[in-house]
Image (cartoon, rainbow, N blue to C red; front, top):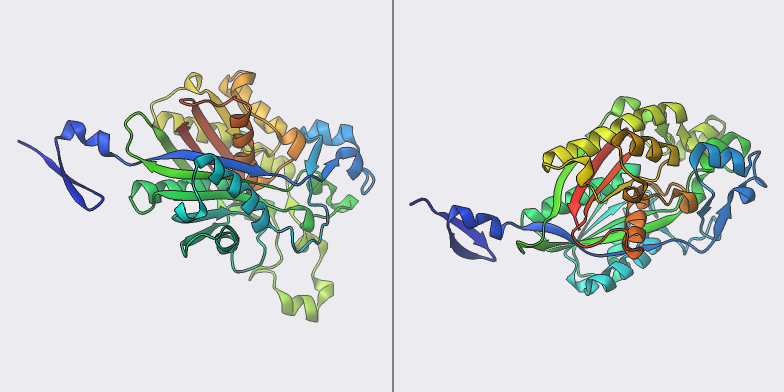
Length: 363
């Protein structure tokens, strides 16, 4: 008779093939938390800094307000500090301590330093053991990519409890002038975190499907150019500062171009995840898109035929917090009871790179 030897916790378990599924390791969300600064910046506030108004911003983005750290140049309120506050809430909900965390995956485009990454800073701030910390630089898709890394580590049996974080402070690096208004009105600050844990419970399904994509030929359609090997660094800034222009220092976005690609890739990625798991759009209990633009979310919702109560948006009050937007939205949806135990949830993102992808899971 055919049999299978399966290693779990250094013990050999004798299993019949039909029982193998009972011992498969799955990734489940055990805890979650988010943090946003108290400082609310309304559209009217921005109209005092640049030529814009509430109607113009709301019509184009759906955003009414966003959060910025109080002092734009505050060296104490850093991205890692925001992440710590979100992570502490996630640990509390999970009933775990920092010592229980085996690994950290930290997604951000706004780290405390050019290097090292913010993951190691978070490890120190939380008081974790000398665990590994990995930084993910996939901007708006960062949290989806970070979840995929954590899921792979857990399903391989490498780690049991992984802290996955998306955190951003955009306000320090935005151009609050008429030249930069097309981008600067969109972005906000904040952090979100989940603890992804291993389980062999046959009643838990956890993460069901993941897909990741990229198209680097469009890199400069949404980018910050300065600070890398292509456009120079400190020597250029010191020796020929006139050569370092605003459009190299601040974020640039070809808004219409990004919009057209986003409304195509969002539903493609969502359907890919559903098909992989053998599900249909009507099976979804909640779709949580990256909060890039309310018009994008509404377009995708209409295309997928999803009712209002199955799509969660909070861009109206937080703006686009890139890597932090999905975990913040997920946390709020959970806190409000809009995502419940057993619900089928899809997280989908599209952003700079271009990169995009989805995570489909049963909560």
